[in-house]
Image 1: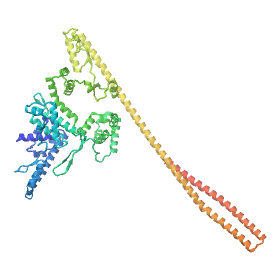
Image 2: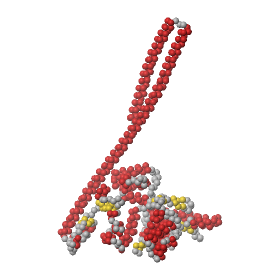
Image 3: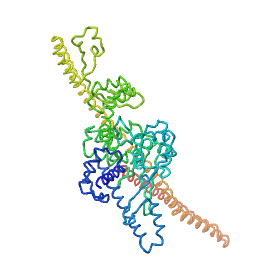
Image 4: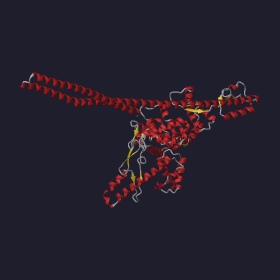
Length: 639
């Protein structure tokens, strides 16, 4: 009973976290049993801190969420089965049972203990539709040919897509594990007689690649599933390359303007502190908060250049934050996965090449006895495929700058890994004792080749005990002198680099200040131009107002004068009429005319004086208006 429970827990964990190694899976299951888990339903009571020592935090949360979700599904199904078995629903028993079975559930006739069954667990591999080579290989317990295996993958992918067009890796894993379990000699991944990585890694990879190839027309596939209650559950957008947060939404309470302010803050920290600012807690917090802004700039169309991104996000190109960005993007810690892969497969690859070296280069790599497993595996694979090391990795001095690398290395167009290493001294070994001079022409005896400090020490000891004493002391002195000169060169180079970095920072600061000053000048110039335009508009408005006031004054003073003139003309006309009617004598008329002439002259003088007074008043009014305009313009200029 206990072994069945352990196997059930293992299958559940692997369905959520495929690829979990056995050395972590077995202790995890034993820990759960030790905590008191007696049935599958007890897993819902497990807490995160109970199993955090065996798996990563994100994996732990996924597992707990899957168990909790499974418990909720089981409770919903139990309610449905109870309702279906009640008397008031007895006429619909057959239909209810068919609906339950169609949903993928099964229940016992004696007790209601629902079990959630997914389509991968009931999937039937169409062996009758497989190629003849596959059927013969299965019957004879032999490995199928690569062509037959590829054809089998095509048939299997088409059959799976009848159930779901874009199945998850966990669903494909259940199908593949059943195939490997049923025919291990034909499909399991083996090295010698030992099964590696569960035996299903290569088959799972082929199947998943084939399904993604069939879905290639839709780069971002949205998987939509319906739960038991009939509601639609939509998963987050998943990229075909495994990205889970390709371009996330803005955090709550944030905008792109606020994130831009935080980006400028990090740029300012880098300007003053350089790479040492990466250790600040403020930078770590800002990098996490601006992740969605980073993705938005990286995914922009047209795509930005690496140089532009490096200027805007200097801390993103440091190892710590590049790894954290990748983990947020794919929900996987690349360093831990890489370390785990080398730990799991590195020893097997090394043992395989030790048992079956494919060429002399592989034998030379094994002979050197590289202690670092990752370096050894990398060299073995390059040697096996007869690839050169510089096709993947370029080495340069540890104190070389980016400009030095571009100047000294011949950088190809394709990407390379550039490793900064301390150059080790070189020595020239004398011919071994007992060998003739002709034999010393061996390439390993005469030419210079790099050695590590430990190898130098060991070789010097061998020379001290086996070679000529004077020659050995001379070699040791030359070696010490060479190492001392090299150390001094490194110190000088380091000092020069620090001075150069300081100069570059000062120059960058000066350029930024000049740029800011230029921006301020442009803003002031635009403000002055705007002020001049507004003053011109005010002057035009005041000029129009003066014209209107002048017209009003003309209408106000000139109109009465014209009326008086008309009245005088009317009086003169009436007088002439009276003269004709009454026959006034000429003398009296002349006197009266003179009187009227004097009156008319007096009126003209008064009119002239009035006109002068009006002109003077008009000039005074215009001067007062002009003074008022000048005062207002002066106030605006002061503002």
